[in-house]
Structure formats: structure tokens, C-alpha cells
Image (tube, rainbow, N blue to C red; front, side):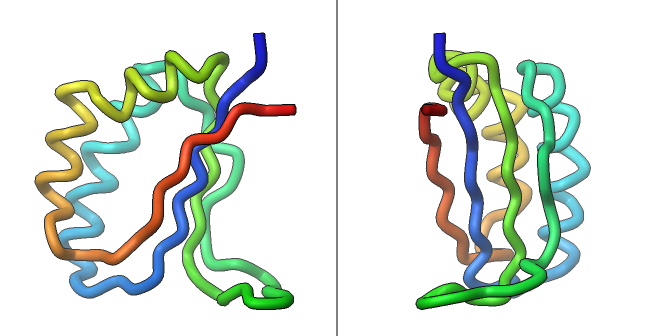
Length: 96
């Protein structure tokens, strides 16, 4: 079974307080759902059409676990806390 990855790219952070509230709830919800943070922070370098923006990569044991985490009550609570505090792109992809 292939692992799955959340790749979240933050295009803009509009409210640091909302982002902090999101992180306080999202981190434990993701860990509880079996997620493992592989990377998080501002990109060190960006090439081609890339941007030096905050990026988060989370590994899950399966696609089903990644989707279940996103749809869980705990993570949805985190999204409510984030609200309009950031513009971001979250993708879930299966590993090769």
C-alpha cells in the first residue's frame, strides 16, 4: 500500500493569530490521525515558477488515512480557527 502525503503551500498569511490558533489545533489532530510531519517552514530555495513561501509536508500510511484526517472533526475545527487567516493550497497525493 502506497503512503500518502499532504502538501500544503501557503500563498499568503493574512493573520498570524489565526494561523497560530489553527496550528495549535491542527498539529495534534494530524498526529492523532497517524500523520508524520516531514517538513514545515519557508522554502529555502525556489526554482522555475516556485515561490519562497511556507510549505508543510505530512506523511500518512495510506490515502484513506490522509483523507480521513482532513475530514475529521478535529481537523475541521482547526480549519474553522484558520478561517480567512491564510490563502493556501492543500493537495493530497499518493507516494510512488
